[in-house]
Length: 281
Image (cartoon, rainbow, N blue to C red; front, top):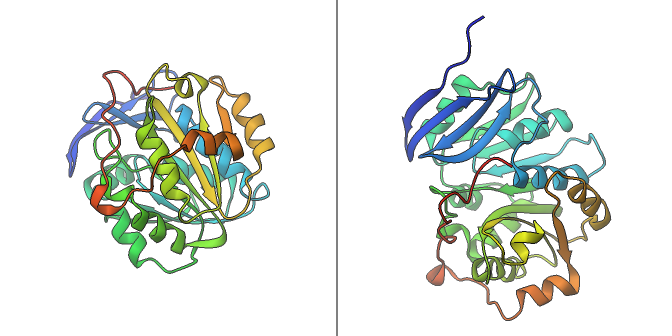
């Protein structure tokens, strides 16, 4: 049997590499310009390797009763890790993946096939453009994990973007976002304030070391019109190898403080991560 070999290809926005995991027979790490983007195990699509991806997975587990099919839109494709997860944990779900890098979509589709029966439509276009033209009230969940290099693009951080996202969600819908930051959390606080212009309920999930200002890291934001199942999320995130804290209510309002919503004219990308900030968790 031939050993899997790395695959490297120039895509629209950099150099993408698929590298086999020596410890898992059909598992692959996707990097773009050296930055880890996704991890996929073709034999076990429900395996989530990265810490922040597991936290997004925990939210996806509790947004509806287990196994119920959902309509999910993913902004940012990577190696389609979460669409694979939803396809096997919530069979029958209809999913859209929006990825601006057509070359990356083609590479992943060629080398990392989706699970059989997965109903996933791929769209090679800008996330905000797609949102602004998508049917209203067409998604139960919207997952935003969009990076240009190692930064979230500025045009996906504003009030106008959040309103476009809220329009696509149904009344019970949930918005999830993966955002990087470090103390004093100017970017993260402003993003929470921006989400609050369209959603009544907000939740922040992050590692305690990040929240205490000890290091740069990812935070998962959850927004909706109905309260999240905080107890279930707290149990799931606390059981991880790298436990996370779930912040909401008064504690989260205190964290947001006097941060202001971001308008298009003032929008900036997420901060530049320090060297070595991102890796496999």
